[in-house]
Amino acid sequence: MKKKPIIIIILFFLTFSLSASGNANQLVKLLQNKFNSISDLSADFRQFSNGKVTLAGKFFYGKTNKIRLELKNLVIVSDGVTNWSYNKKENKVIISNYNPDDPSIISLQRIINEYPLQCKVTSDKDGDLNILNLFPNKSGLNFKNALIYINPSNLIQKINLTDQASNHIQIEFSNYQLNKSLGISTFSFTPPKGSKVIDLR
Image (tube, rainbow, N blue to C red; front, side, top):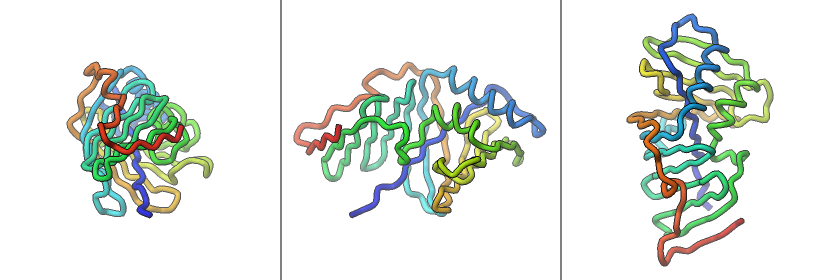
C-alpha cells in the first residue's frame, strides 16, 4: 500500500520589517496579530523531503481552519468540519471529519497561536531574511525543530523543518494573494459524477 505523503502546511506573516536584533517574543506577537487579522489567502508552494520535490501546487486558506490544496493528481479540501480528499487518477473521493490533531496537515491556528507557547523560540537573520526558530518543549508536537524564513515583504519564503523521524522537510511559498474574499465554494467539494465515494464520517 502506497504511503500518503505528509502535507505540512505552516504559514507565518509579519506586519513590518524586522531588525536583526528583534526580540523573538515580539516577533511571535507580530506574527499572531497579522495572521489573526487576515480573512483568507492563496499561494503557490513546493515541498521538498530530504532534498527531493514531493509536492507542488496551489494552497488556499480561510478562517477558521478552511483549507484547499490543489496538486497534480490530488485535491484536498476542508471547511473546518468536513474533509474531502479527491484522487484524480483513481477518481475516488474520501470524506472524513476534520481533526485538528491530524498529523498530515498542521493547523495554521495551532502552529501560530498555540505552538509558540509550547516551544523555545529564538530569532536570527540570514541576509535580508528574518528567521524564527522553534524548539518544542515536549515530544508531543509533530516536529523537532522548525526554521521559519521571512522575506523583506514580511511573508514566509521557506520553512526548514525536522520531523519526529528526523526527516528534513522544506516548504517554499510564492505569489501570495491576501484577503481576496474567497467564496464558500473554494472550501467545499462535490464529488464528480461517477467517482467512487468512501465516507468515513
